[in-house]
Image 1: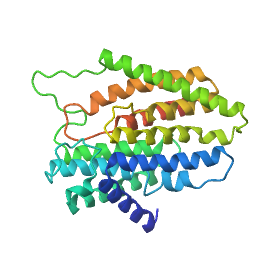
Image 2: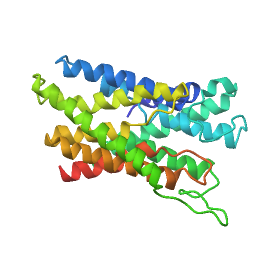
Image 3: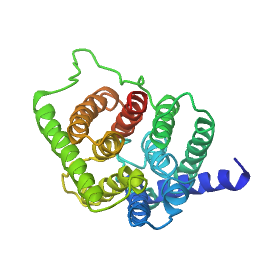
Image 4: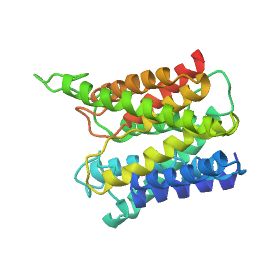
Length: 287
């Protein structure tokens, strides 16, 4: 880690706050999709590692910092109505301190990423893990509740409501199955096993870009915690059914993570990042 990496992290966090957490994440998806398509086509690509998941656009920097800066804007600067509003572009608040806080959290994200990638004992998706670290720290620093929220007297927490389980479970199962079948079609068409290693990033990019519809106000499903791990399982095993099962499990875990970490609280912790970090650890452990 050098001074340029640190500066890129600060700039990326500032960018994530200015553009907003989800808009920054969508741009991450654009670069992930471009780089992965090039790799699947057999072209040597440097975009994915250096740009999409690099020290500026990486979700552990720009996305996490944008979400953390929203907390500052709401809880401290009192210029945002909701600390969990990850859709808001904070540049419009005209508050330089909010953007600078984003820069500081970007630094936290890149430092965390640099440290965690220097070890090999704990193998998971490191950007997702660092998103979790940044946002857990943010709740401790800028939030007023516990890490899992604070229930008021008489309140009850629903962990897995039946309707949510049915809706999201269906999405997870069918998206996981569809992603695996598409992967099989690519392999049958002649894409090499080596090139297919980038296929999970391709599915991640697709899911991230699809959040543009969420940003526009449409109630589309959030899917990168489904598609990325499901595609990983397919690439590792070649089994479409295991991939579909992974999608189902992760969709249910996403509901549970949201109810546990984003209910009865005043900061945002990203449920997809939690699910990806946990599931990718388990996947690497098993396969």
